Image 1 (cartoon, rainbow, N blue to C red):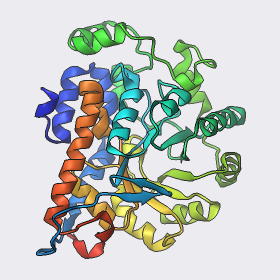
Image 2: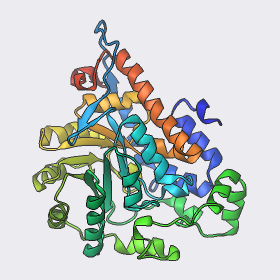
Image 3: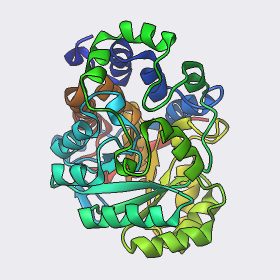
Length: 378
């Protein structure tokens, strides 16, 4: 499927499936347990209808918004995702460059396959750095210092992964980074010749920010050993002190947690269930936006992360009180399908579609959206 023939996220998904190794596609596409949460993330937007307004003169549309002090040309940014060079040889470089082209923020995963410093130097647009909760505080300090020195504008602390979720597709595929060579993997590699050629003609895939601390064969063990289920709110306060800058807490769906996050000093809160990859019974982030906004008011900026597949989803989230939305799978499908060209296609679909849907909604700017545009369909 040619990338120019992809007209929505589902098309990009099919293109990614056609090009990528099976285990790679399943890693992007899969989720925890029965994959209920990921479906709910997507489908929950359907419970909200857009009450369009007519004769508003909304011919020219302003898609810009401000997030954590940064003016973005669009109301979305790119959420962090690990291991991008496994999906396409250009990996995080392609994604960061595509984000810069549309004038939005790119968030680099702590488990990226390109280093903090290289991505920082790639473009001049703002970037966020995502950090997992590690047991080794010295390692945490090192990552924060590198991100600060490289000029990252904010730190995203991911807290919904005290341990890894039960991702059964990955278990069936015996997924590892880097991949282990088995008869099953060889067979699947033969069925994905373009991916296979890229993989074997590119430098070895490692977690670039930890390359000096780990051997390729011990990446999975390093990750499992460093996750810190005992991390608590006092630890979060310590980490904020170490960073001493703009901060976002990612993985919140509880209103009580949102209140405490704001009180602790986080500037932003990402309503997220890790794309359904952790607790399969967790609620869809969009369904918790209203309750959380009601509890915290304007004490922190809110980002809806997860379930975004259509431009109307973005309009709904912004009208319901989000300061921005973020997503990963849509651009990862594009990356796996066609590298930077695929990521650019994914983002362009959202930009052009938003302009169209905003005119149809009758809103001339993102700032004009409010709850009067939304009807909840019980």
